[in-house]
Length: 126
Image 1 (tube, one colour):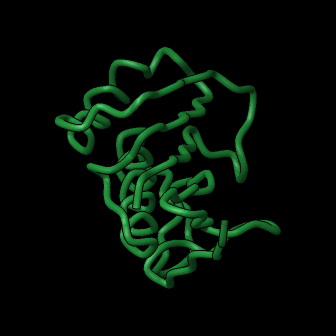
Image 2: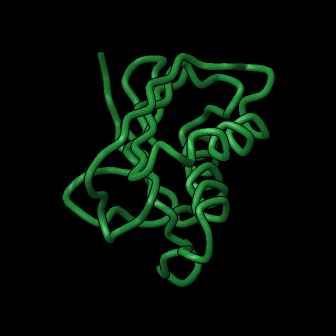
């Protein structure tokens, strides 16, 4: 099965030795996204809500660059520093995945890259 790296300047460049996404067959594996603004490389840290929106927008842009979209997402994994913000996350998440409702895992972690509060990755159909 052939595989290829997906790269777009519309989303933040990786902060380590990995790809934004990898396409393999009819699946797209999107690496964990943090709230980095792709235009200036700066973190979006004003509020938890803004971080969530930026992360989901980054996922959306990479999905589209890989030939998919939010409606074709099969699985999302969410990493949060504070599960007390779970309800707020769900409200924002529903704006992006209201109809498609992919499978999902959400876990609390002690730390995330660059000190952000949330990170998400995804697997989607192409």
